Image 1 (cartoon, one colour):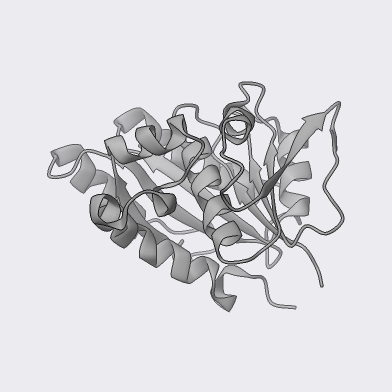
Image 2 (cartoon, one colour):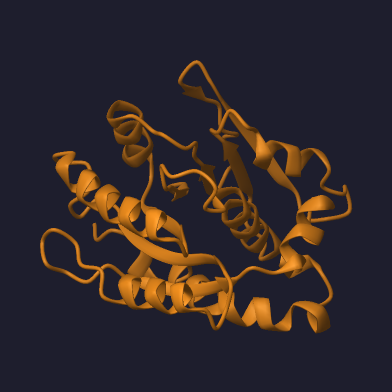
Length: 221
């Protein structure tokens, strides 16, 4: 069976890539998949999360990018790649060549919205690396609900089109919640905290998880 690779990517720093990557990894691991989390960011946030993850939780392996080489366990079924900020064209192409699915978190600020737009066009300037080879979706992340800028980000992502004119799927808005901080501090995801405390957060994740579980998030053969 071919390994499933999900890339969490946005070259703009501070958009919550590690939070998405660790929670996605945990979701698949809880659901019985053999998961490896690849920390490709020099900051090492995902690796730090794995280092404090309790032994009694579902197992997630770690792969670290070392001199451009990523050593992934052979039995890995799902590989989640947490990428660094400021990725160059060459490294971007290398990341994209490995993945079938890309999740792009964007936070609610004018600078981040403009950067996201530039990045989408940059992606499609990399000839042959995108078209029909990878499925992309966006997520509004760390959102302060009921604010004007949150509404602006939701509208922007909901109407964002690819250079070929097709709609870029916008999956969900994830609120800025202390639950993510509490979970990360213990090497857990929100799916491993008490459901009564994380009900609303889990509900916000549902559209993204349904997409990741569906054939819509995979390129056509």
